[in-house]
Length: 321
Length: 113
Image (cartoon, rainbow over all chains, first blue to last red; front, side):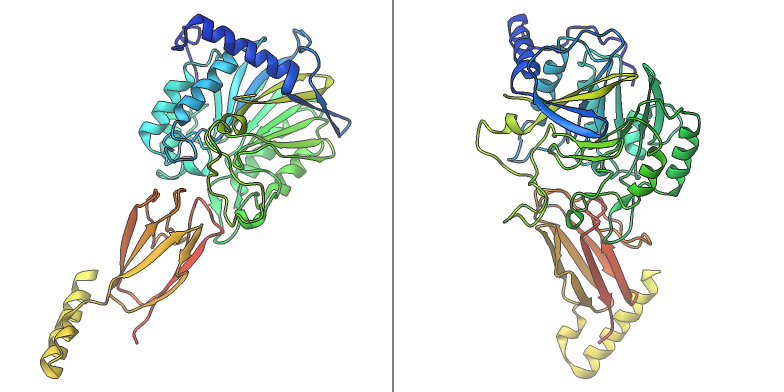
């Protein structure tokens, strides 16, 4: 999505509040945040003890997910407010990200006004563009037809695409529509054929980032937390030296490493979900947490990639920390 | 599609009422309700007479749908408290799921007793 007036100061917050937000975000880099570094397929977690290195060759971008514009239940009566807080935090990052990716469920019920409001709120992000992939909540109006009226990235009328930036190849997938009764959703043959053709022109030394809403590994099948044909997609990605898969859907941070492929789910900006198979919780419904706790369960993720210089760094920062 | 069948039913009902003098034979099959609670259709298996109307009501905080693969059932997204109705005239087994949560499954069996 192009955002021509992205430099306008559209936030309602006064300068002092923005400054506080900036300091809070800086604290995220230097204090509470955990940096996941993946070197040679081995993840290392460490408290971020120093500000990020200033490397002009680094590609920085931010992942947000599961904003659920239109949700208004007890678990979060103000999802718009949560997105605004995330926007302020992103705009205050010490080094501006190149763009923001949103990994699905931008809307709650696929209503045109929900998509429209999300697009409007994204205008407040001080980035050139926001790349989105659909979640199943975005596929409730003529499939993804309603979603594509607002988020058709390359004008081709389809919900998957690829692009290159800073020597990194990005792929956005739609894995929220093809489903069998009682089964996991899937990517589908058409898109897998497209992915194969798309990757054919990408050298194996190129870092690849894949965006998809539902995790590309099976986290918990009884709740549908997996993609039926993810193995077929991962097989196409396996020859690449650095593959980072960014998912949403489960509203919490989970990781998996498979050789050179690392998969990460992200926090939501709407409401928490239970941990997979959590005792006493029979279904993946919104969790209402104690007052003051919600901001600690919602958040954003900053990603930094330097081509030819691993590791990929991911910093998950709650809205409140 | 439905009209001739309904007329036939009506004719049959009138005949039944006249011959047996049971006034309730005029009544349509009792409405049937399916509750959607805790990510499950309750009851998940339902047997109804042809002509029955089934109403699904979502009691969850999460939206759900009532969707069959062949398109016979295609509800919009049902938010909390929303309900959706469908009348079943033709006999058969209608298997459905929720497009948001495909692990949810239900079946409406339409059979003459």
